[in-house]
Length: 209
Image (cartoon, rainbow, N blue to C red):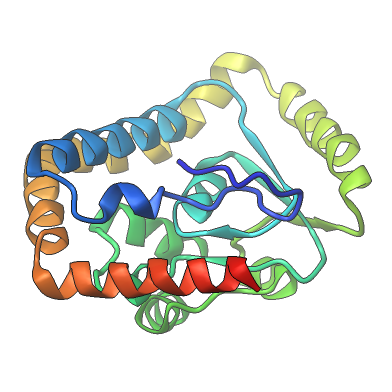
């Protein structure tokens, strides 16, 4: 995952430069690491709270959707799954995170158009759980949320969490090799690489301004 050196970015998602003209072997290792990261975070028996202090596109959105609770600063930040802009569809296990958070029709529309939600929209659609007015409010709110979770006996919390989440992790495990094959096939296509190349060029142009 790429964490931008910016106070306005929670997590920028996957490092796109790693997906530009990669070797097949490198791409397979990279994607398996992403699968493992998600499986670990999504199924951990620990309490996880995302304190979202900035933009959270793509993989950043995957991270916050995988936590037990998420709190975001209500500012000009954006979040969502915008993979289609890079020429590929979000894989099933990523897509279902958004579908489960908000109604199917809204998720479908957002995925097709690479929509990035405002914090208010994200709250209304159930993508984030709470909003705060400033970054200084994030940790106090996160501690409040943690205290609420800690009131539930640990074993009961873990059983409830895993009873809901384990089937999704088991589902990915059942086809994770095919998931890697699909990603490799899509990313090594000339069309996808051309789109990623243009995207990176646009980023360079913006940084020069």
